[in-house]
Amino acid sequence: MKKITVTSPLLPDLDEFHEMLKEIWTIKWVTNMGKFHEQLEKALAEYLKVPYISLFTNGTMPLLIALKALRVKGEVITTPYSFVATTHSIWWNGSTPVFVDIEEETCGMDPEKIEAAITPRTTAIMPVHCYGYPVKLKRIQEIADHYGLKVIYDAAHAFGVEVGGNSVLTAGDMSALSFHATKVYNTLEGGALIVHDEDTKKNIDYLKNFGFTGETEVVAPGINCKLDEVRCAYGLLNLKQVDQAIANRQKIAGLYREALRGVPGIRFFDDMPGVRHNYGYFPVFINVEEYGMTRDELYFKMQDQGVFGRRYFYPLISTFSTYRSLPSSALENLPVATKIANEVICLPMHQELTEEDVNKILKLIVK
Ligand code: T4K
Image (tube, rainbow, N blue to C red; front, side, top):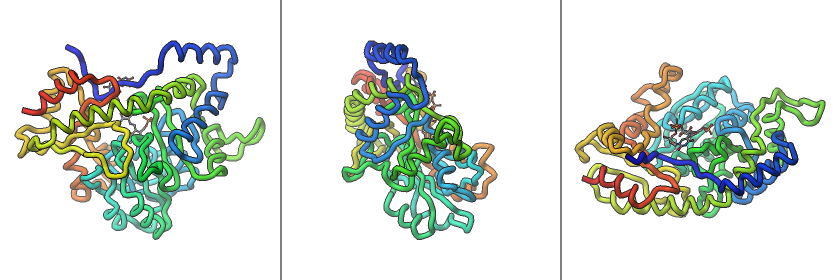
């Protein structure tokens, strides 16, 4: 039986990649901000319509480096409905995560829950553009400005997402991207931090390279999270085909929506007005009473037939042992996130899915 997985990596043409590898082998400059690193930063800044970008070895380290660079301490308000790396970055920074609930319409942090979570120790907010759906940027910024808080967006899912023609990545103080193999755009492993000015970019570049500003000068206790030349070359090639990949994904989203609209007990997201989506994920939410089957019954029934969706994001981060004793992890504080985590299945969604695959998946869902 053919296995249909939730995602499949976008891979560059092997011959073209080989040509670039030959060049790297000739030059023998394989890491530490070489030619392809410089080219990829430039190309991505242009593609993403952002002024300054710094590449990283994955999408977790830019979150941590953002917290360090902005000297965030104390408590950081965040969402329990995400990949665990979001909260882990706060923990690694030595800060306390404070969870607030999400809103059903985007699965992002509910801005109206933020103020009640602010204490004298609060210094920052870390929302997530979950599935690439932008959170309420304006409202979050208003609250942050009012209370003097930093905003670091976990934009791991938001590659290429635009609101009103502007990149969603320019919101807040900094935004972190993931270029993991499972993402719309990937460099195998990789990531980036988007910042607003040259000085901050310089600082971030120092921090990701041990704090070195030159051969003999170290200005800060930096760490090593650089992206090597091989992955930068791979990333340059993938950038050429990411628009086509997004277009293919958009077509699949259209097929899913057409077939699932009106099916009792199945909810899904439509495009948001004025937003350029990247179709990274296609979550559906199962209402057991109306659908007549639990989320897990459907999830495992699909697996039995070779269809491997994923329950992103179940369980909630706030239920993991490291975090469950935090006061903000209390279930009554997170009713919407708890409900959504029990309803969600991300259906297979990637550039290579065929109509036949999609029909097979839909047959299992639409009774
Ligand atoms: N913030 C958010 C909101 C995130 O979602 C993530 C990562 C991060 C921060 C941190 O960014 P990174 O430091 O990871 O760059 C995956 C990814 O590993 C993770 O990057 C991602 N979020 C998360 C949502 O999903 P898993 O444990 O579900 O991956 P895995 O290995 O089970 O793969 C899922 C499916 O993808 C497989 O069933 C098949 C397919 N696959 C996967 C890989 C690795 C392939 O076909 N080929 C592959 O090479 O976490």
